[in-house]
Amino acid sequence: MRNLLIAVAIGTLASGAVAASDQDDVMAVLKHTAAALNKDDIKSAAADCAPSAAIIDEFPPYTWQGATACADWGKDVDAFNTKLGVSDFVLAPSKPWALEVTGDRAYAVLPTKLTFKVHGKKQKEVGSVWTFALQKSAAGWKITAWTWSKH
Image (cartoon, rainbow, N blue to C red; front, side, top):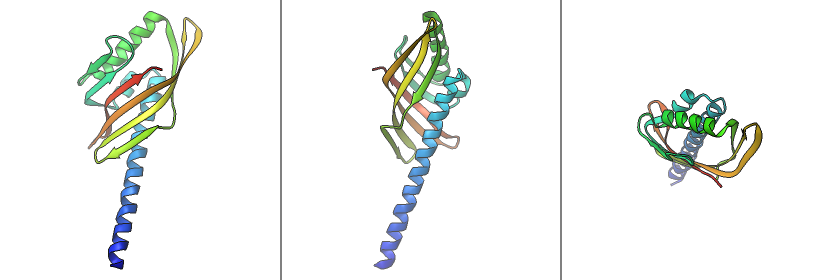
């Protein structure tokens, strides 16, 4: 009985370590995506997306799907920002409200502050929420979907 309890305890601790490592790996992808977007490096951010990615965001056409979803979103956000005179945007995600990893799937909800300029005038969007779904593959964790919800 004692050996069984020890085995269960070790198994529980080991699975917690794996989950913590997976959570760290998921957060590394999300931080990389935000950093790439802050540098206006759409190509690098899009590399974090799975081929089947889907995005919902606050500007037309509001949804993007498929193998080029993240790159297409990047082109559209650049065009939209240019049209409105938006520049110098900085995404600042905070500590996740939720970060769950189940096997090869993950779900993360990040409160996010967005600062930017409109025709040179500083603006901010506080209270927005960036929500992600990810899947782990041989290439690592990849974003399968994200939504941006403006507050």
